[in-house]
Image (cartoon, rainbow, N blue to C red; front, side, top):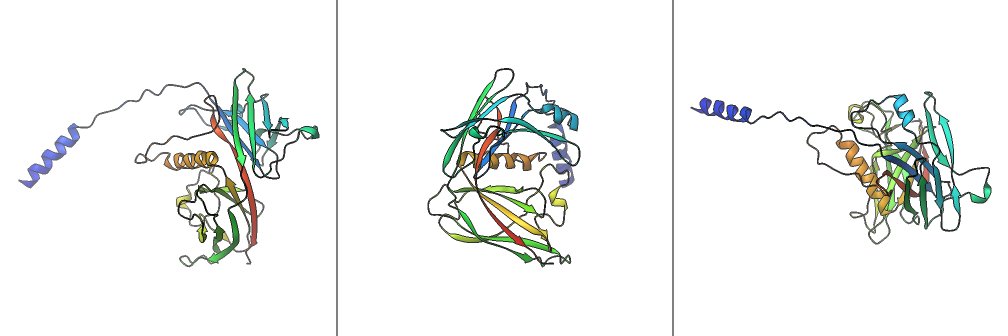
Length: 297
């Protein structure tokens, strides 16, 4: 009898299957903004056009997506700097385009400072305008010390974990984003790089954290034995940034979306940027603190 019931249930379940066909339409390209300003540094703005979900992704497609000849300005309320377009070619031969201050016009150079608000303005060649604001907050949440410790669960004795002790000021609303640089590499954010202070408000705490990861890498970090760790002999620099709420919201929703990509069981999410006129991306302000350790061999 029980076998008949099982067969009946299987028949019902199979009969409930339905083929769903999605008619995904091409959408007009949107402006994508990756802009930032940091204390003691000049603003940097990268502009590109979005690609459709089923677009081919190649070096040529990515190169063609950059937006050239836009009028880009950054204002601190006193000075308004018109940014100049630059290009940079990496070791693979790929060229990246970005906008930053014009070094030939010293009168309009803007350098980030604590507790200041900045306004970004963008006008593209087709006359579309976009604006955003961000704040470089005070450097109130700090890393007190940075160190390393050996890993005990592997036979690889060169692997080390990174540990930091930090102090959070009293009062909710202190947000951070962190990056790490190993030796002469780039500063890379962690897979989860942004945090609020709902759990650690007003206390000094110690935590182990992951080294940054290149999210453009085709390698799955979960498949590597050394993800999040560094090695003996490395020089590691931690970039620990206080950020405002809008910057926190953008990067937390972006990282959730990035980690959910391809997972059929993940919850749907929307990336919440701070650029007007329907553009994608964000203008981020960073109050940065740097700490470096040299791990002995």
